[in-house]
Every structure is written in C-alpha cells, then in structure tokens.
Image (tube, rainbow, N blue to C red; front, side):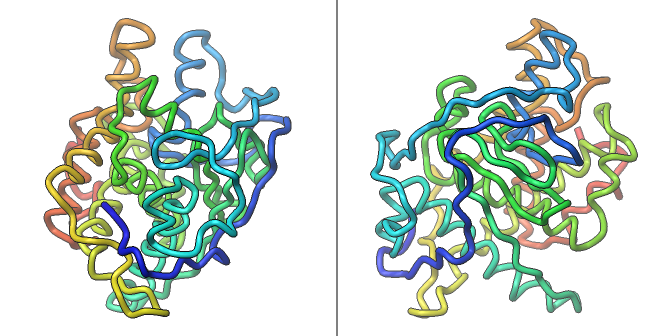
Length: 304
C-alpha cells in the first residue's frame, strides 16, 4: 500500500533506539506477532531453550531502503509520503502515523480514548523495559514501557528466511499488528495471553490473532485516514496485490509453518501465535468487516 507522495510524516511519534549492543533476555511480557519472537521461537524449538533466557549480542544492521539497499540513516530523511515509498524506516514512521491517527478517531465511537504509543526504531539491539530488543527477538510491543520496538532489517529476515512478500503492505501489516497489541493493552485485554500461554486455542494465540484482525481493520480504512497537515490520506487505495502481500507475511509466520520448517513436524500444543491459515483468516476478518467488534477472538469456540 503506497503513500500519497505529498503527505507529511511526523517523526515525533518514533524514537531512535540503540545502534548495536547487548543485554539480558526479556525481563517482562513481550508481545510480538508470530512476527515478533520468530527467532526466539526457532531457537526454543530446536534447542529446548526458554525464550526468556535468550540474551547475547546482536549484530548491528544498517537501515534499508524499500529495495533492501542501505540508506544513509536518520529520521531527517523522512519528511513526506514520497520518502516512505522509498525508505523502509520512513515507511514504518508513516504507518505509525496512519495507525495512530486511525485509532485516535475510531476509539471515541466506543467512548474510549487512544493513548499515543511511540515506536523505537533501532539497528541491531537496544534496551526496553521488557529486556533487550534485538534481531533475535524481532518486532514486539512492551507493555511495561508502552512502546513498540522494531528493527527495519527484520523485514529482510522475514523475506529471505520465511518467504514473505517484499510488498509494502507486508511491512505495514507488521506495524499495524504491533499497534493492535498496544490497543489490547489499553483495553485491558493483553494479560489474557499470559494466563493461558500455549496451545492452538490458548489465550496467547487468541491475543495474536486478534492483533492480526485489528491490523486488518486499520488496512480497511487506511486510505481514508488523513494527514493533519495536508488533509490528504496518508495511503492510497489498496490493490489486490497489497492484500496478497499482507497475507503472505501472515502466512509466513504461522506456528505450523515455522515448526514444519525448523523441526520437521507440527506440535499444536506448543503454539503461541496460531496457524498460517488462521493468521490470514483473521486479518481478512478485520479487513472485510472494518469493525473492531468482529475481532473478538475470545467469543468463538475455535480460532484455528
């Protein structure tokens, strides 16, 4: 999903994290997307490692542009929608702007207010209140400091190792998913993931699939969410290819697909994010309905 070239990007909604470094593993609840936590999940599956014990030093990665090439770095590059169409970090910033603008106008319909959530853009590793954010962990939302953590180089991992599309909505879906977790936190739902942390119908899986659905709701309305400075929508209308891109990313990070690739068998009892089919289906549920009330994964008997 491409940005309208003349919209203004608000870089105050993001922070620059560390550029490389090390530290201990997550010290609190880390909520990813089956996207966030992929590398930790693989290590746990292969070696029986508790993901909360994973630490170590991450290799710093340079920022990448939309074609996977290195950029000169720095948010000063990110001024307009045209920049978001060319540079991955700028695209993340534009998506953060759009997602927050959407929930800021949508939640009052339900007599709730959106509390702004910053994204920390880092390269290699940085510290969060939930522990070290690194390439091992992937994107995640930390409820202890109310921030999203994301290294733009993760999209290369998603594409090269897991076969996700390189299209823009595949990346924007990741950002919208993490902000879905932020919304769950503000609505008091996020803790249900910890109460029932594993299994195909677990609370953890239902929380992740709900975030997929909330990402779909945003995608449905994204082309109508305006930039305050220009009054123009941040994003152009979705195409059929855009939807395929988002579904490609969702499918790439299903628990069953990851397990089959890493351990040669599928063990649903250890699922934490949901199957590939379920992840695609719940994104489409949000996209087709455009209604967050249709994302209640706890009201159905089965989510997979």
